[in-house]
Image (cartoon, rainbow, N blue to C red; front, side):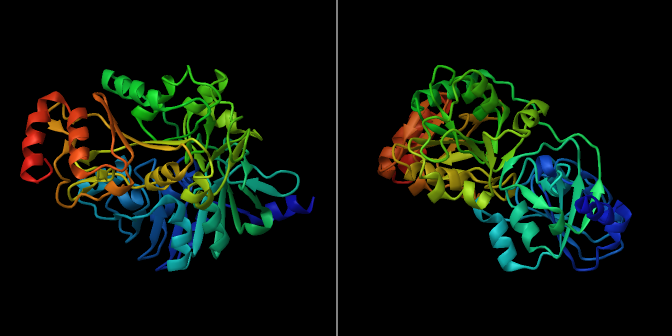
Length: 430
């Protein structure tokens, strides 16, 4: 009963929360499915200047960073999405990227600055006074523990989850009750290039492998080509709906995993309501902090670990760019380097980078002689293992720059192979 009374004492409305915001504060919000939508939609009304709000993959065009408003709020994001890019295109320079490897995003943050406020989303409190941070603990738990003020938007649509997600009422300062649907992402539709890439990748995945799948149409399609495999396991940054589908088809059993046998391991889930219902009070799905799940040395403990991520472009010697095109920032590193390194350190593991060979309807090759000026290197060539396009598989690990260039040319689109050969010769690679 005392927990219910404490809950009532801490229950408030968004207006009172906005009054807590003072000039110069640093505020961190939960990410993606656990984005505090009410707070982020209203925070621009707070009477404070020079407020820095940290987010990750914004789900909506919130006024505080997307529109010209009187407030001098600034959005700093660990991973850009559509609305961050659009804000910059509109000339509203209120959003900035925070370079990071996901497993260090939260821990690095609290070592470099004071966290004045954390605002997250939680499942309803249970009889023992516990909430859960529901479908994301990428950095949320680390930040919550370091914050001066903790605010939770308690949402009945947020699933109760297992793992390192619990938060007691004593750790919370303010509660705002909300009832909005969680953001959803629909499974991607596959084109012929995605299907060809997925077919090649499926050849590399052995029975009993543990998988990490990134976000996007290629990883979604890969899952559909794994239905003939047996006893696959999941240790992934993002839990997806395609993994649930494979579980229902008895392809994923988690029975051969070296670490956390019998369990799905993830740090956040992002999909449709079907996925959120699957993780709700499911003891077979364990949510742990990104600092654990994405630690390459933890990932490497899974034998036959396979990491599958996508890229914007790859150069002839294997440098992978997944974040930006030249000087234009596009998305973020996320956990790509984390999971790739963990996989290649695993006994029998494989790190796979997938991309379509061309862009803009075949006008541009995504395999390039060298990365354009200003392009960030997401995975350096010395770490790269496999690169896959619709035209085949290049295995670069341990090979010379000449051997790499030849392998990359072979998986480039046929229309660009002669050009790539000439450019490789100019660079002294061939």
